[in-house]
Length: 66
Image (spheres, rainbow, N blue to C red):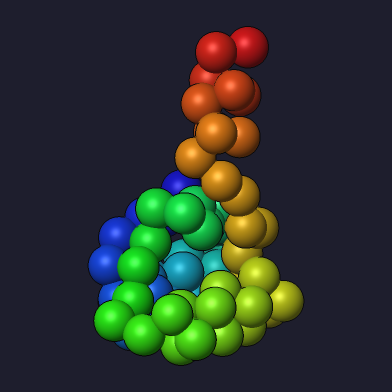
């Protein structure tokens, strides 16, 4: 599971590296951020299409409570 700041930079790099190492990556889309909303959305879209399963904080909390 990946969260953090600068979706288009640090998060992008971490997700792609994990994917290349055969990890199943869950990216918590509402627990990442970017300085520009459009760039954030573009980065999420690219990562979701290529190497991560996008999820939300509420989904993670619900899964952990089950």
